[in-house]
Length: 286
Image (tube, rainbow, N blue to C red):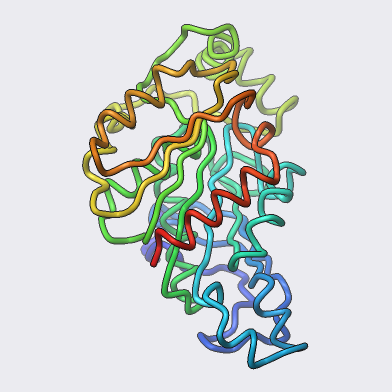
């Protein structure tokens, strides 16, 4: 257990606020409130690189003070190609923080499949603030989509806009074959072995206690922070009743996009959709 606050940086090369140091990406480990080291990458975004070619244009760019924090799906990590692709699209609109949830990639700890991961996201958001970004938008996919919803509900005022893509509305859903396989992976010892050695994901063996706040109950607490819910009509994990439940819980506050032909999470979110999400976020975050 660590007494360091969320976002404390271990082995960091981060420079003080206002120093770009040439504007290149930074890779480091963040320390969560419960002491887990979280592998993280910061890319200052296209506006910083443009500053070297045209300082006047870059200084007037609305993206210079905006950072996106990407929360990947279960079994993802900071170096997965689909995570890097999403980050590459978003960096044209602002800085980008990517990280591996606990139990994933090179991060420490074990996955709690959306529960303690709120602390991982909190550390990444705080890092973006410490790097000088006045506006921070969280963008989560699948498990990460549920985490950004719960984070915004449990840490009111921490972020300026929230985007949840392909997220579940409720826990313990087993209505599709992929979700039945996921529950086997998480709940059975042999499944956790497959996760560890086949999917590079170390899963905690303990059940949730207490059960975390479900996404559908988190959503009403997010207002007045702008909220966008995105879901594909061909999502093989969570059918359309999930995003509709989330949108209904948001009332007039949240915005819902049902994407024709889209499957599940990062793999299915093409560059055009990610760019539209970025445009929404730039406008919503003010």
